[in-house]
Image (tube, rainbow, N blue to C red; front, side, top):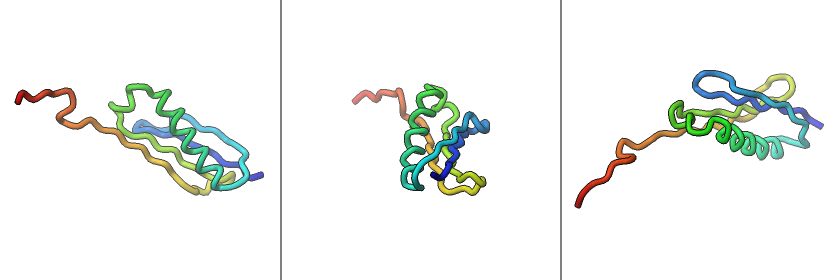
Length: 84
């Protein structure tokens, strides 16, 4: 069974990685989405400050196969109310 590495990075560099044996690239891409969800949960509200997470998917030789990038930003109007 192929081995895949999932490396999680934010604007400050690598914040974690995980190696998983999965049947194929399709399963690895699905796993990347789950890893992204976990990463967002661990960075909590700081994601909005840093604004970027990336999950890179590589094979066991280090060849990059796919990446999932998540960016967040606050609108300039967030938290403001307008009177009619």
